[in-house]
Image (cartoon, rainbow, N blue to C red; front, side, top):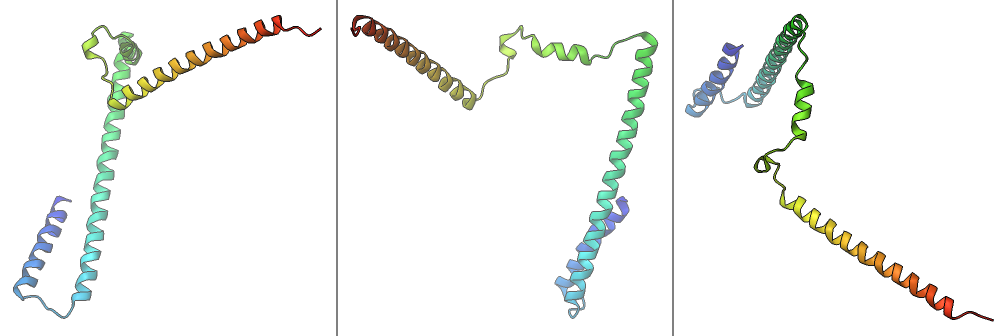
Length: 143
């Protein structure tokens, strides 16, 4: 695989040097482009296949490792650590290690606080208006 890629890279460079020096046959530019495109497609396909093989190999190795880990856990009656990992983020004993807020988050919080203040004032005004209305209705009784 590596030899194929090296051959492709060196071959393309040699072709470029030949063409620049005038040693190449200048009449087949269209044919050369087609060949170059075909070689590029083959190279891309080879790279893709190599990547797929690498990923499959990695997946199989990870499955084997996980199976071995599970066998050890079963043998010694050990619980999986994922349960402990979930509990860790809830605790924040050190305030210096907490997640820092972005300026956007800070602006959103400030806007929310302003809205809260506005809604409090609005509710107070509505209650006062309601109280005044009931007082006025109590004093102005129609006979």
